Amino acid sequence: MLTMKPEFVAQLERVLSSVEMLLPRAVKPVNWSTCYAANWRRHSFSGFLQAVRVTDTTSLHELLGVEKQKEIMISNTRQFLKGLPANNALLWGSRGTGKSSLVKALLNEYACEGLRVIQVEKEDLIYLSDIFSAVEGEPYRFILLCDDLTFEPGELTYKILKSALDGSVYSPPENVLIYVTSNRRHLLPEYESDNIGWKLVNGELQESEATEEKIALSDRFGLWVPFHVFTQDRYLEAVRLCVEREARTREVDIPWSEQLRLDAIQWSHDKKKRCGRTAYQFSKHWVGKYLLARQAA
Image (tube, rainbow, N blue to C red; front, side, top):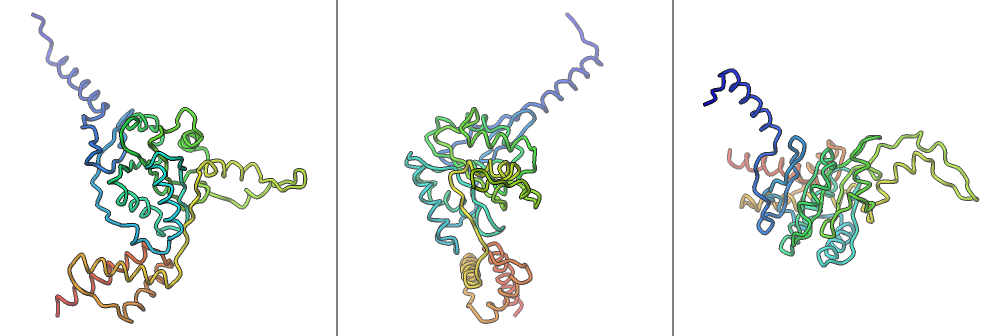
């Protein structure tokens, strides 16, 4: 009987441990009948879909100041769910104006009709073909969500996403749409020098090559959906809704007051932003302060 030396056994164990660290961990396949969302988790040379519990309860009617955006995205998503032609969508605009919240609200609204969401980080777009293979043939409709996406010139994942939107080898199966949110309309930084090189061709002004390249990706989305900062009235309406929701969650009644209104306006001035996120953050501040004072009384 062959007996291995202890030092050889120890070395073999170290090698096996190192190899084991490179392998993806064993995970159960996502049960899409009970799971509505998943994240792609990178591991070593590959990755896997990890089920996540949806905790955001935002509904479509709670999103204020984005009526036109809701109309566009609801129609597109319903077309997709019915197996009808639908477009990949770029939701772009000022931060905190409801881009991501709208996608989450769509999931909350249509999960019962078979809608599912897979969130993918920019660095993991290189695994698009693996993700598509994992859900192709499933009896559900998937939104591949890249949230808060921006690129720097020359990034590899830029070209991969462009290829997927083009319908090349990376093109998604018929049960997958791509929704992207970004603060940048063209997903790339824009410089003053980009405007150099515009020229007249047959009497028409044509964009510079730099500008053409920057538009090349965003132009491949069928839908461009812009989001803008709120008017003060819209902002205060959002504050009222957020305060009511916070109060309802804690089973208390918090009356609307002139002081509340003035503090909400001041909060937006301090934040230099009127948007849904600012309204939500203020509501947390105000309700928490109100309840703390009531407990101390």
